[in-house]
Length: 193
Image (cartoon, rainbow, N blue to C red; front, side):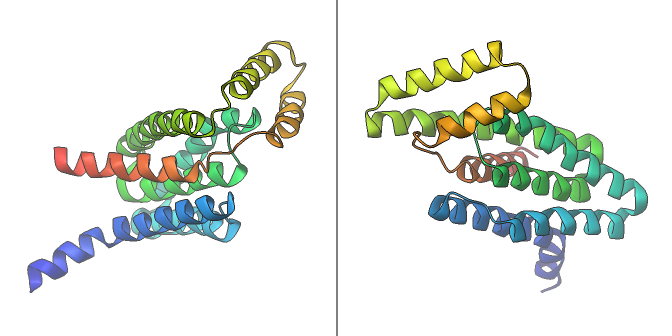
């Protein structure tokens, strides 16, 4: 019985983080929006856990990985590739990973989880293109995005054009690839150790 209690006590934070990520993915698939109560809750609870368990150093690692999560996804958000809730979901993941693993190990977990999420998102986007059969529209959107990046005067103009383009796009709920990437990487990492 004590072995089971020790395993549960050691893994409950990862189990809770998994539930939060899955909840975000399900809501995003349903409503195309990850709610603030979930994302801000993830961020604040990750920061609080880090500070409680590891003091100021843990809080700093958690905050640093929260910011790192933002830096990774902000450019994609700025060009209309995802919603703000997806960015905040990744920031919450970073805060929790900082609390659980610290800065050095956590940095690589957030980075590799993000990379896996990007690959999964790419595969899902290609599947959506096949499913909807709107190749010309997707190609034109890609051209528009690349043109905006090369010709726009500033990020505000890029963001404005992305918002206009978003109305005519079929959207991928990016909370799903983020969840699959993060949990997939954590599972692979757990199996590899």
